[in-house]
Every structure is written in structure tokens, then in C-alpha cells.
Amino acid sequence: MVGWAAVPCLPSEGPDMGCRKWKLVAVGLALLCGACGQSSGTMPSVSLPTAVSIGPAVLPSATPMSEATPVPVVPAMPSCPPTEPSSGPYCDKEVLLAARDVLRGANTEVLRTWRHDNPIGSFEGVRVHPSSGRVVAIEDAWPAFLTGSIPKSLGQLDQLQVLDLGGNGLTGTIPEELGQLGHLQELRLGRNRLTGTMPLKLGHVAHMIVLDLSVIRLRGAIQSELGHLFQLHSLDLRRNRLTGTIPPKLEQLGHLQSLDLDHNQLMGTIPPKLGQLGQLQSLDLSHNQLTGTIPLQLGQLNQLQRL
Image (tube, rainbow, N blue to C red; front, side, top):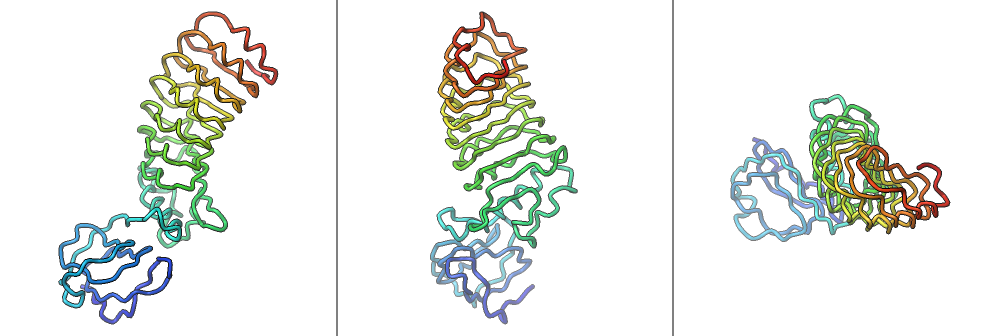
């Protein structure tokens, strides 16, 4: 048993960055999070099955803390209010720590700098914004060493601009939650052992510039929603198991410079409207089951260097 009667205060990471006085007896305490809180009142003397996380809520009146019975606490990821700007770096760190073991799988020799006692800016492969401290990039620093899966929780990194996990041994599917990353500009997951279909929500990431899902095991159709990625410069879906036809909506990608769909099982004809992609420099549709002739409209692609 750990008695905290003599502890004058515990630090809070809320807007006031001050101390709040607690009077608590904790048995096996693993985590007490008071981040971004405006807490007041008393703590109820009920069994808590998870870690205590005190966010921006007023605690209800119950048994005074001085009379509270010892409560066992089990480790868990604290709740991070997304509306509190000051909680951002703290919450980003918690997301990465929770994602660490999922990403690395059985290879515990990687991501060793992702620790509670290290500042998030020192995490290997992680880049943070110089002023806000928020995570803006997770870049490929561990080629061939990540053997786990892609955690859904990465979708909580709402300032992330670059996610590069390419060239590893990741398995499982691409989480739909990555479609929540509204600031994402580059998503590179190619050359892994991923399976499943392409998440529909990826077509909603409006700022996407590079999308590389090459050399994995994607199946199903190319989502027509990709035609909504109006800022896209590079789309690489080569060497998958994609079926169906080439979506005509890809004609809407006016900034597209590179389109690689080779080595799939695509059928049908080449959409003539691909000739409207005036910025296109590289187009590879080889090793598919396409039929028909090459549309004359492709001759309008003045920037094209590779076909």
C-alpha cells in the first residue's frame, strides 16, 4: 500500500499547468491522469476497473477523499480530450506508446526509444512540429523490422502529415481510421504483407499528395472515391490483386503526375478521359487484363514521359 497523505500536490497538464491537491490512498497505483482537467469535488469510493483519468469534468459529490477506501487501479490508456489544444502533445505520446507493441510485433528490438521517460521528439522515426510539439510525421526508420500490424489508434494523431511504414513485414488490413487524418499528405504503406480491401475513407483525405499502397496484397476494386483526392500527385497501386475496371473518376485528379496500376487483374478498357490528366508524366497499366486499344486522347498528355 502506498500512502499519499504527505504528498502536497500532484502536477496537472491542464491549461493552468498547476498543482491540484489530492488526498488518496492507492494500492498498486499504475497511472493517475489529471490532464487538461478542471476537476473539483470528491472521488467516489467505488471499484475502478481501469486507470483513473480525470479530464475536463467536475467530479460528482460522493465519499470525501479522506474517507475513501483503497482502490486497485489497472493500467490503461488515459482519455485525451481532442478539444484541448494543450493536451495535444501529451495525447500524441500516449497514442504512440499504445501503438508501439502493435507495430513492432515480435521484434522488441525496434522502437526502443518510444518510452514514457523520453520526450516525444526523441522517438525514433517521429517528427514533431517545432512550436506545437504535435506529431506531424512517422517516417520509415525501420526497414524490414516492423512485423506487427497497423494500429487503429494512429487515426487519433490529428495533426499527422506523413505516415511512412513502407518496406516492412506488417500484416493485417489497412485501418479505416486512417481516413480520419484530415491533415495527411503522404501515406506510404507499400511493400508490406497487408491484405484486405482499400478503405473507402482514404478517399476523404482531402490534402493527400502521395498514396503508395504498392506491392501488398490488396484485393477488390479500385475505389472511385480516390477521384476526390484533388491534390494527389502520385498514386501507386502496382503489384496487388486488384480487380474490376479503372474508375473513370480518376480523370478528376488534375494534379496527378504518376499513376501506377501495373501487375493487377484489372479488366475492361482504358478510360479515354485519362487523357485529361494534363500533369501526368508516368502512366503504367501493364500486366493487367485490359482489352481494346490505347485511346487517342492519351496523345494529349504533353507531359507524359513513360507509358
